[in-house]
Length: 102
Length: 180
Image (tube, rainbow over all chains, first blue to last red; front, side):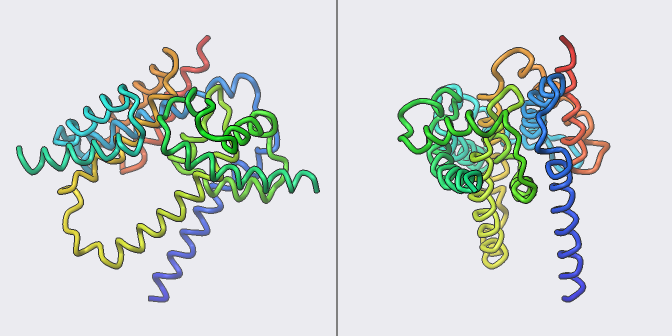
């Protein structure tokens, strides 16, 4: 047990250090103009990747399964300007129903 | 001293802003709009005046904020044009941290009684959440292109790279911003 806690503590400290290093060393200064043009696109790039992997990723493999239906329903709900919580619930219920029925 | 007071005030309002932000439609314009009550509106205005363009000069404050950056808090705090709302980041980060830890504790205690979470379609929840965060950010062709390129990079690398690496690599898609 103590070894487990040692690992948890070390990994936790490492995570805190890695997360802090950028803002602590480089923060407090405005970004150069060119860099903010790139960083502006970081959010859509990463979110696009997350959507793709969460929808089609299955460990190391790619799979098309009931999640696609759930995400499709979510997309329609977003298009219809539904609140985010409703979007997530609709996707979850759709996927669960598809698994139960199909 | 005045600086510290302002930060605390921002933090408190940030929590209110996030609560409204999560309940309201995810459109940027709505979040800025008047139907969210006075406090979040003030927080957004304060951010535009103080945060965002003005960098945070207090070291320990940057250290704390850095710890609260996760996918969701970061996406909610994004205001576009490379700017971020600091109080949104703080509020969302704290709410996420508390619910994440509480959820993990509940899962550890009673999770084995639930069975396979996939039965409830919970594996689609994150995809839907990230899509909901992405759509308001995809404002013009460059943003849409970055999202599609990021998705393509991540899917292409998934069979070959360990989990997590495809997402990090997909961040390279933002380099299309270098093109005029």
